[in-house]
Length: 297
Ligand SMILES: Nc1nc2c(ncn2[C@@H]2O[C@H](COP(=O)(O)OP(=O)(O)OP(=O)(O)O)[C@@H](O)[C@H]2O)c(=O)[nH]1
Image 1 (cartoon, rainbow, N blue to C red):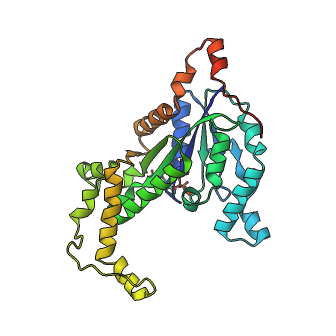
Image 2: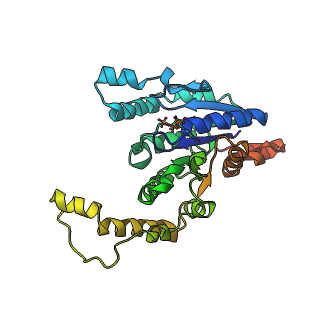
Image 3: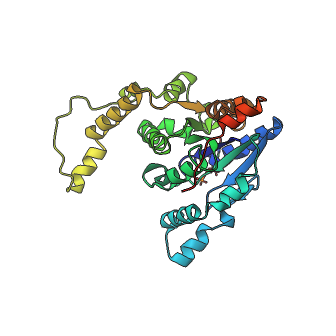
């Protein structure tokens, strides 16, 4: 029997927990079952108490105190500990039927999505490749307020791409907190961020025609000059073109105060994990054939 889930990812403060809350409410209104898993060992408050909470296994505060680690080292320790105690997740999830949507609320430390292999290892365990056999997708949230600063927006887009490459899961990118920008940024302009358009950066002074110069990276003054000058703008443009040329990233827009917007995102999640197909009644023999064979070790 398959299970269905969504990993909610994104930088600190992107609105992951708020999104999970809105999604739980929407699922409840639609009479659908939801299982909410908090995987952030530093989380504080929740509108909905998680059904499974990593803090019942290990808390970041205790780790930092006992191991004399900072917040980032502490988080890595917590995830390593979770990976050594996967029964903690399995015992809670194994009994769930395929009607449940399992929401995993992840921490906001960006390094988890960029260069530390802990999350891919967890994904492998949870997903169809592993014993829990969850049809998983990833929802990556980026704050819509980033559209005001185009370089920041493209840097955020790169982090979303990095997560896509690391997780190898069906992936949905979401511009969160749309309520904060929809009255400030014209709809037509916003559309250019939804399917990122490299020409956005051409709208600004891009320093075309600046003299080519090899930078001495050992000289902080030269590096400073580059980061605030023409080379930096050219680098931004090159990155934006790469994203645009390969149509690598596009965004859905989320306004958590608008039930329709939350419902639209849920439809994309359902499609990505093929939720509705699994709810159709099946011939028992067909069901048996679909069960993947998982071998221990
Ligand atoms: N206006 C507005 N504020 C939001 C929205 N979503 C989240 N916020 C606010 O943004 C802040 C961070 O929201 P969270 O949901 O805690 O973000 P998070 O990504 O879970 O944060 P971390 O767990 O620290 O990574 C809170 O103050 C929220 O009230 C939104 O859609 N609109």
